[in-house]
Length: 240
Image 1 (tube, rainbow, N blue to C red):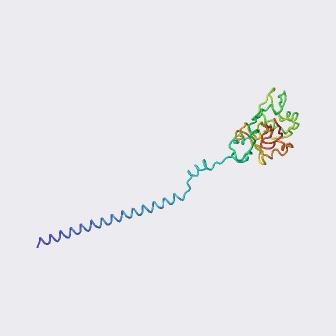
Image 2: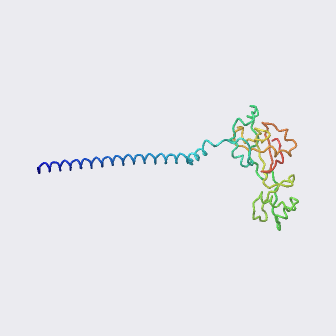
Image 3: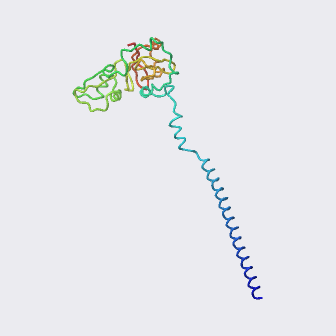
């Protein structure tokens, strides 16, 4: 009788143990599945957030490569355009006859100040106002002298450069350039500093030539000299 009780007790204990292990295994599997489910939900949420945000690095790379376009028309002053004239697309330039394109000009590039300005030697007791009054007939033109020569100081014997007598008023930013006219249209005149129409040169807005009575007499292929007030107007055009 005692042996039967012991056996029954052992069987009951074994069943309890098996049930406990089975319950723990079930709970473990459930926990693992729950963690996997939570992980998938979290991954989907994070991926959605990242995909909805702009990629600043990609935009920056695009802006520095594929979004750059060549200069097509003049929107800046000739001083800046002279540095980028060689980026103009060949399709925007006027076709030039071979004879004109191969013709070399006697001079190309920027002139020196003494070639197109009036020189003046500073004397005892001179002031900028007295020089402007005596040489330019207007004391208010002091700023033109400063623009052309800098702020000084000017001592006796210093050479100053003044606007030529033909110019009665300017910004003081006077320049003269030599080169070949390789394109002429309603937007700009393209003056090249070499026989290469796509080489270094300068673009001058066409409307700056409005005050030049003989502007229509110049043609593509001509070697010309242009005196202009950078940012405002052209004062003269002549064949070299």
